[in-house]
Amino acid sequence: MLDTPIPDFSLPATNGTTFSRAAQAGKVIVIYFYPKDSTPGCTTQGQNFRDLHDQFVAANAVILGISRDSLKSHENFKAKQAFPFELGSDADEAVCNLFGVIKQKMMYGKQCRGIERSTFVIDSHGVLRREWRGVKVPGHVQEVLDFVKTL
Image (cartoon, rainbow, N blue to C red; front, side, top):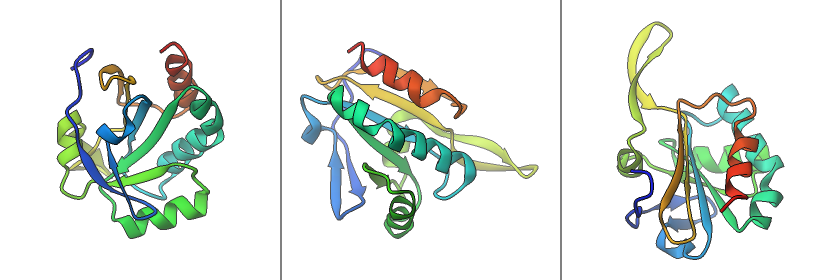
């Protein structure tokens, strides 16, 4: 998948918007997939993107967080954490499947299907340039920013 164009996709996002890859032409897109709104790791990850958001914008990047949560859940999470970027709701898993982030995971000793925490950077021409899968939150957002600055 690396170094290949990402097909256009769209999904409903916070603030009554629809996020589409094509509408971001000319910008670097940072998409981070996360398991669930308002859980500890996902909250910390979102806060890290929030805290470095101005530097991403300065590097011509747009950030989009995606999970399977509802738009209502996303709106509450975004407002509570003051995220300056949109969250996309992928309830039908179409975008999750495009990026292959749905995995069998262990949750409290039980097998379940869920989103593997992953981040993707798409360059200003719509080409996937970097992916991180099975992300550990500490230090990750800075690593993503450092990569975006090289594009």
